[in-house]
Image (tube, rainbow, N blue to C red; front, side):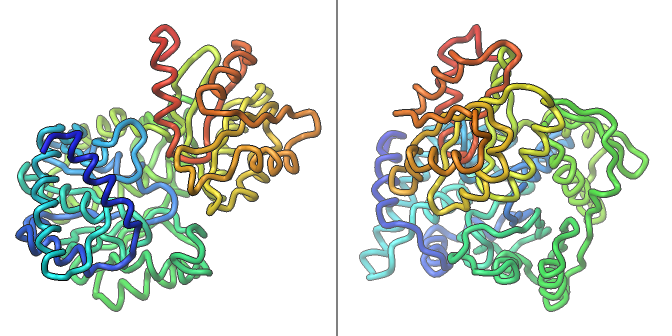
Length: 434
């Protein structure tokens, strides 16, 4: 099987949709010899910040000399970045070889009358096989959707169950209340692991605390309120925490909260016998990159991409825009899924916009049409804001650049799913790409 054939096969599997539950992946991994049983995991669940905490944690551990696997979804730059070892994506030949193994295992399941795994379950199995082959010391694992019934929760060797901010998202899928959503996400807590979380909303804290108590797991509370931002701009920030000073290369004030969660994770790992020097810690923060989190792609005019796709993320994005660019003219490129709370995203971000270019997302079955998004933004933007539905992403980028002056700020946001395309468009002109 070639890499292209592997992608074609997985595209075919994706037509069967997504189903929550561990039955099919349990049987698939059994067919493959249960590679996950030979690995140790830091499992991360939450609504916002999972990827950033994963990036900080895995980069710090890499700087400390450990071999670290990381599994993320969705991706921004390339398909293969979802499976990485020490920040290097899985090679095409290895991906093709392991996909072939998974394909044969699925064929055996189907011959026995078993339910066929979903594409996410197949990709998760490929990741576990690769991490075992690469003899990873630790795997930092991001939940795909929810927690308890997510395919990643098939693991048993959880060292740490880590939670980022939990808010209302995927309503009707994970639950209809914040407490119900927290219950699903708390399902990653396994007997024998340690729980790490920032201070959450009261109903969320109650759920996490009770689940940790039931499983006999110690719970450590990260305290972002104790962090003091010393210096910040759109390229990163310096903050102090527990008498130490750190430089974080990810922009956005909320990144300090994610960094403090990562600091608590590292502190717990040290109590478990992992050796992480203060220099590795500082260098890990400096070297952490995570595309799509207020990432600057161009300097004149400033051009950012951000994956703000729900109410909480939109609030954090607005907070950063108001802090970093007061008085600046803001030009938006927006694309959102129709199953998201797009009215709330529009209400939060719309008042700051001077111009808005709306687009259809690549997933045409889930996208909120550009024309409809333009109508929604009209209700929340200032009366003189220019709002234009665009025929495609390329036209939106071209038109936003054409109207922007050197001191203006362009921001593409709303969903991670199209940001890689924006990056590709800007990369075609190396003079303009940072």
